[in-house]
Image (cartoon, rainbow, N blue to C red; front, side):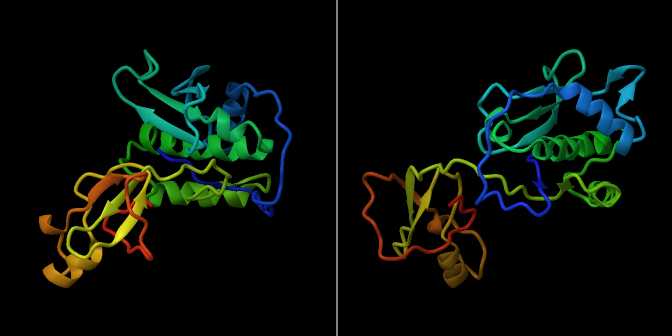
Length: 214
């Protein structure tokens, strides 16, 4: 699940950081578990969820909690933090990211509630933010991520509007044409045609499309 964190009083767009060696995550996990989850994410001395750094492939998501067959055997669930995204940032970024994912694990494994950023998540997030001032957990992270150039140009077959996409999106349709011709309902006649960006003819202006990834 995508992480959501913000550092208090720090504009990451204007600050540069020196990369430091990656810190082991388990000691921090145990501390956060004691301080903010009443020890509920550990059984005896063993965490209920595996915790690790990514292998370098997570470049836009700061962290995730996931579970399922084949995930971190034999536990079947794990928290993964992004090595490329968090390595250059202050330690508080790692703390808030890990804490965010631990809330997901707590809602799932302790409360046994199926939700993403629902009321249980938000209540625990607010409690943690009130209880300390070192970091702040939020719904959307503001960490700098490398820009990914658009690879596709989506073209509406009806009105000719164009919009850049990073990837092709199945069943994406032109919103203005759906609104104009079909009362705002999705319709196959408005399906966008995806062309490789090098072959597309640039448009003077582009319109928003349904399910846009731009």
